[in-house]
Image (cartoon, rainbow, N blue to C red):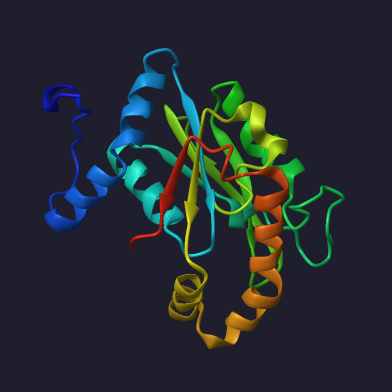
Length: 210
């Protein structure tokens, strides 16, 4: 593809070297987004993958480039009081609430009014209003779960080497939470990825680079 055919973005020019590298790395995704938008008024992108692999960073970049709205899977964890759901490989996610509060309004091109879950207090907070936008990004582990498949236009998967993942968990969460990730969250997520072939069914697979 010639340079004059590539998508052109209006973005913050600070830290230009890093920004240029990221734009180049994800160029196939930008091209696909532009292609889908030629035939659809709106689209939904999911960004799934290993913990600390770069999902949120890419979601933020899409938000900046396209003025997209971001939905975080962390906002739809089930509380201890709710317990685990019967949905296999993702029973810690409240998929019913995600579907009724986010997916259904999206499918009707309506504004989204949803309640975010607070992990610290184990409670659902007051509602968050997000006005309808052309692009919605659902970011976080379990975002590409088959429960949501019919509502997804583009699937992205991030992968990370195990030791790299552990180092970033320590940097982000500290040693205190590392044991929980090793014993619980990482095995849960890996079982989900494997059972549903999440990586193989994604249109775009990126390796963690940040």
